[in-house]
Length: 165
Image 1 (cartoon, rainbow, N blue to C red):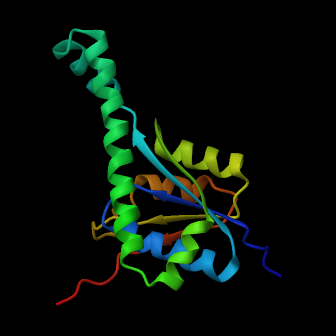
Image 2 (image 1 turned 30 degrees about the vertical axis):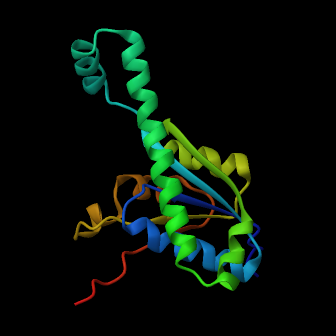
Image 3 (image 1 turned 120 degrees about the vertical axis):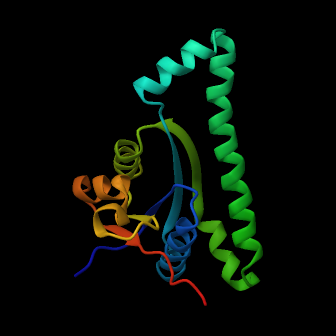
């Protein structure tokens, strides 16, 4: 017997493919009554990027403000996408919006953070989208691949819908 689906972690990279994954997460939540927790991880800068950043932006307050702005932009983009998604649905379908229990945007390493949040929230499933790359290795994307390999709970990887035309 399959375990009950009580909580879903929907992880988004804010790409076009993430919309299809969100549709699946909301569909599952509507059918099961599960809570939805939304997570977007703004990837930390690499060591090389940090060195370059420190070289060209001397003022530490300016560096701090610029890094904070990355998170704020992601939050804004996520909210705009959410509003657009809900506006497109019929009102009886939009009721599932009430099942969203948290929306988090954090700066960290994506795969590790997704696994960490899944454990902390005690979710029953992680839902993620894919990238438009072509071959299987890059198709999943390194984040989805790492989450899939490291997760001990079910991970639903949602492919991009077929292109129209």
